Each structure stands twice: as structure tokens, then as C-alpha cells.
Amino acid sequence: MNDSAPSSHRAADKVEIAIHLDPELLDQLKHLTNDPSKIVETALRQWLRGETQRDDDLTRTLVKSPPVPPRGEWND
Image (cartoon, rainbow, N blue to C red; front, side):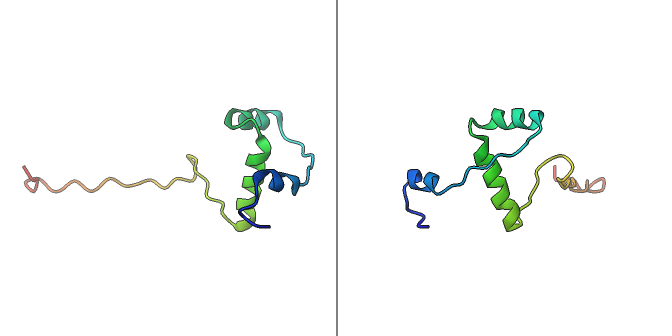
């Protein structure tokens, strides 16, 4: 498929499927967009490419504060 094709042509190339989602998950998706299928499609593409970079509290690495210099070495 050509990347410069009109978006209406791309939509015609898509296949409609039905999936079962948890109602709470669907509510969260609806807060992000009126078309949850875009989020599902993007997530599947990223997953298939191996792009699973999560950004939540359990996956963030903490940035350590720089050490405090010993007394008398402050740049006053």
C-alpha cells in the first residue's frame, strides 16, 4: 500500500473484527479517544514491532540526585 494514499482508501482496506474488552478498560479508552479501535491498532502494531516501552510508576527508573559535595566545597 502506498503511504500517500488518501485516508478514505486506507479505511476501506481495513478488516472489521469484534473483540471482548473489560468494561473498565473500555471506559479508560473512551477518555482518550472517541475511536478506541485506533488505540487497539496502534498498540498491536507496537507490540508486533517489539516496541513495548511502558511509562508507568512500576517501569520508570529513578534518577539519582547528584551527591552533595563535602562541607567546604560549596561554590558560594
